[in-house]
Image (cartoon, rainbow, N blue to C red; front, top):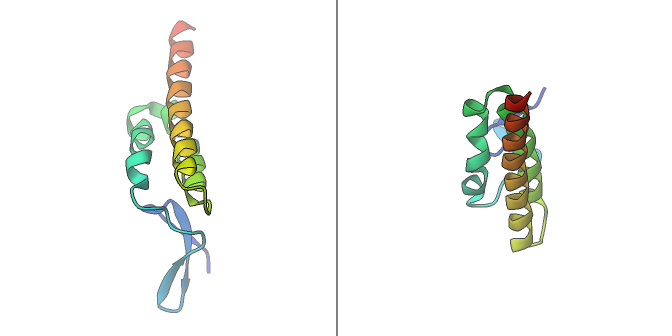
Length: 98
């Protein structure tokens, strides 16, 4: 029984009997509002945007799932989002200058 991906939670899940169970804790409420800017990089940023977007989403989602931390984990996840967008902008600038 291979795990599948739950794209709403950005997490793997397995089928146990009649139930589908996430392997990791679910994302907190409102997490998609924080992840939205980087999700846009995938379809509109080409290959570079998609690569940076996937890595940024995974890192942010992992940070948001950590226990405890309160607002600090949202701040760190937001910093990851900003860093990913800046990395994308720098990559585009380097490609254009080349």
